[in-house]
Image 1 (cartoon, one colour):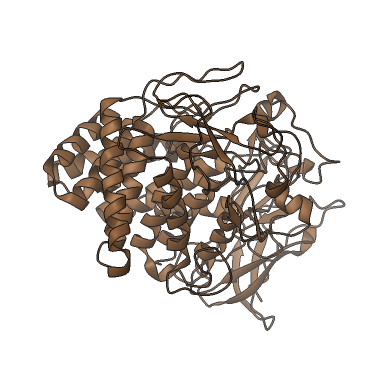
Image 2: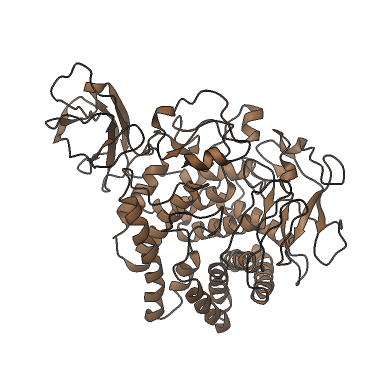
Length: 585
């Protein structure tokens, strides 16, 4: 056991002190950081005592100076460096003068099994056959709005994933999720096992589970492109929001009767909205670029496998066709709403076309794609969510630019330097932000802040891969630790992971109505209090047990809080990529 004992001058009323660390644990050779915080300053002569499992003191340290940074009612924070602790084991870190303690793990592979664990949540989000419920849902998806077919024409849009706690489906997010799952496998295939079949049932099928999940996404995306000049982008809208319901029991009415057909929106590149609120769409290149990237990655992974060669060729052809549509209609196709003002308001698209063009060049060798990728890379530059202080909902999406990483290996040294510079610019801005708060978080607390934290950490790790420069490793570690419990609330931002320490009450109908838990869903994460207070229909189910820890941002492990505790499909898929990268050691 490791005991962290603070010994100082006696006080009549010891300060209330709390300890926070990464609940998944640390590798022996990496930096390890624990946060202690209190309402009053701790005695300057205090000492830290480290004890192993046998009760032996193996390390005694002086309490470091205060960081000078505070959070909420706790203005006094201390960051304790325990990097000298290198022996694997389970430890308890205790501040006995205040009866505070926390467990800490040192292990060779603290993220072992995490990428596969996150896939459990994605399988639970499946539409069509859902292995979590062992039932089929939404068999009538769907009937068209907009596009070349008469309104209400049937198109087969079954499959895919429910986007979050609701049961809508978006190409906007699914294209990103699918591409990131494929990239995760390419970057670290050893991180993934084969425990389920293609339907998500517990029986191995000879294919790593991450590829089963990516194939689920690719199959749905192929359905949304039924002809060379056609692309559909969204199934259902906020008419879905009729209260808690299990997907097979969905009674939402889109004009074809309760529980019947759902609307399928065609990507025409123009503002859309069947109700009060129209989108601000200007093109389809955001969707087309991500679509092309996912399809090209699928082609690269399966083209040399004889049983999958025909599927790989189909993916490549679809990627080429949809990329061509995006090139002809540069701009963004945003998400659609009906009766509520909230939608995915993406405004960037050149990053997506860069990614698609880079992967198509890798698949085909056609230099036109390489020229396109360089043009789009320079057009988007350093623009992404990484390093920004604020943004609209999904305004800069995906939250980092994976196109720069995909292109980097394909270009000459001068162009590589440009791409690295774009990444560095965002990382430097994020690091300045991280230095201004006690937990080292470099992302603003906007809606889906955890997705931005994942993106920042991923960009830092990929920068390291591109350059061999470890300058942002500490920044990446701080983002990971924030997600895994080194935060004011002491909670992992993933449902059920680690066991007993993750979010327990997500805004998710399948778990709320069945009483079952699902592992691996990344919840939205803390939001500024002003955002929480401004959203429609958000409240808590009871008293807030985390009230004392709320500060510049609020997080509620409460089933009613869709702003901070709703798990998202695309955020979880992005975390699969991050943890696959981190699991390489």
